[in-house]
Length: 362
Image 1: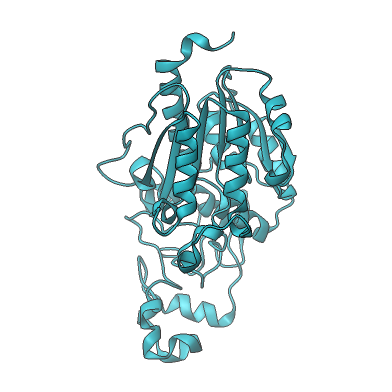
Image 2: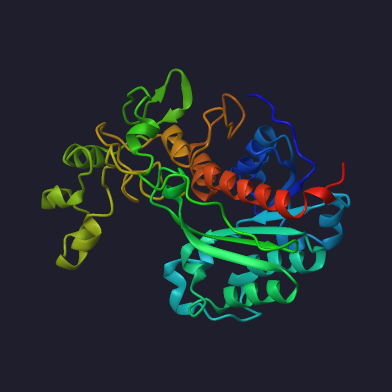
C-alpha cells in the first residue's frame, strides 16, 4: 500500500471501532493521531491500517486534558466519531425521550462533553438516519442547539450513501460543525446510478458454504445447516426470497399469515445489478437479512461484506493466519463505510482550504 503524505491537520476518532471512518480520512491525507474505542479487539486493525495509535478506553472516561494532549496545540483540530447507534434504532423510537439519567444517551453526551471542553475547530458525527428526527429524538435537537450556542456553524442531513459510491442501500445522518465558517458536505459523486453488487464482488472466485478461498482468508462463507442449504437452494437466484419456499422450509414464526411481510426481507438473495442491503454485524449469516449470494448457494463471505463497506482488500482486520469470523463480521457491520468517511474528509479539506488554510501551522 502506498503511503500518502500526511497533512498538518490532526484527527482524533472517538468510537473508532476498526477504523472505517478514520481510513477514509487517511486516504485523503489527514494525520490520524488516535482512535479511541472500548473494544480492544479493534486495536490491530485500526493501528495496522491507519498508521496510528489505538486507545482502548470508554470514551465517557476520556478527559479533556487527555484529548488536548493528542492534538498538541495544532490547528485545526478535527474531532470525528460515530457514537454507538443501538439506542437510536427504530426499535427504540417509542422510548426516545431524553433524560440525563438515561444510560442509553451516554455515548452522544460523551461526544458533546469533549466538544464543549476541547473546542476542536471542526467536528463530524455520523449516525443512524432516525436520529435526525428531532421530535422523536430530542437529544439530537439538544446536541445541535448546544453546538450552535458554543459558536459552531452546523450542517446535517440524511445521506443516501449509494449516491456517494457506497454499494449499499444505506441512509445515514452526517453532521458537520465548524468554528471557522459555514461548512457542508460535498455534492453527490454518483448521482446517476449506484455501484452494484456485480461491480463490487463479481470478480471474486466462487466458493461453497463453509469454504475459504485458497488465495484470500477473508473470502470465507459461513457453513450452512442442512435446513438452510435446502432454503437457499429453494430461493430463486438474483433477488429471490423466502416467499418462494414451501411451508416446510419456513421457520415456525413465519408460518402464520401475519409473518408474510417478513418473508421478503430475510433469507433473501441480493440482486446483481442493484446495490446491496445495509450491512449489519450478522451480514455473514443467511437468516438475518437479504445476505444470500445472488447465484451461489451460500451467504456472502467476509470479503464480500468488507467490499460492500468499501474496505480496500489490503485492509487487515486481524493478524495474518488468525481470523475469528464472528468478530470480523461485527467489526465490518459496525464500521462507517470507508468511502463515506472519505467523502466527509473531502468536505473538511475543502472547508479548511477556504476558511483556514493560512492558519495551519507548518
